[in-house]
Image 1 (cartoon, rainbow, N blue to C red):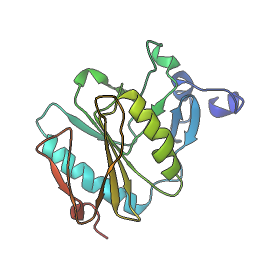
Image 2: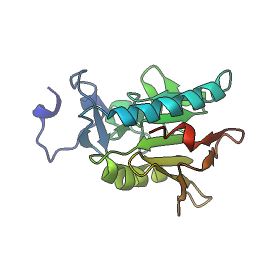
Image 3: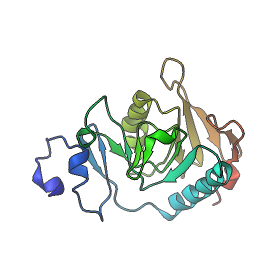
Image 4: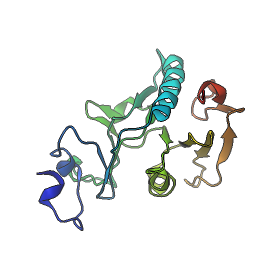
Length: 193
C-alpha cells in the first residue's frame, strides 16, 4: 500500500505511484517521492489562473494544448515499460504541442513548455532537481515564477540541449513566449497584488 510498503531508501516507479491514495498528491523524480502538500497559497493560485487564462484563450482552436496541475507528466528514461517509469511530475502549467504525447493519464514525454510557481517549500526542487530534469528531458522552455519577488526566470533549450542563463523578467516586463511566437504576456496582468 503506497509509500508504507517500501523502505525509504527504495526507489519507486509509476506502477507504485498509481497505487497511492487518490486524495494525496505526489511527484516522483528519479524514483524519489516528493509530497505535494500542503495546498498552494491563494497568491499561487491567482497567478496560475491568470496564466492559464492567457494561454487557454490564445491556444483555443490551435494544435497546442495547455494543462494545469494536477496533471501527470510521465518522463521515461528510454524504452522502459510505462509502469517502470521513475519520473512523474505535476508542473503548475504545461503546454503540449505534440498530440501523440497526450492520453487520458496526462502527458507521456516532455511538454514543450513548463511553468513552476515557487513557494518556500518548493523553490529548491524547482531550481535544482526540476531544472536538471527538464533540461535533460528536452523541455524547450521552462519558466520559474517567484510570487514574492514578482519575477520570472525563463530558460530556453539551446541547440546543445542546455538551458544556459535565464532571461529575468519583473512585473513591469512583457514575456514573449518562445514556443508560441504570437503570444506576449504582460506580467502586470499576472502579478496583481
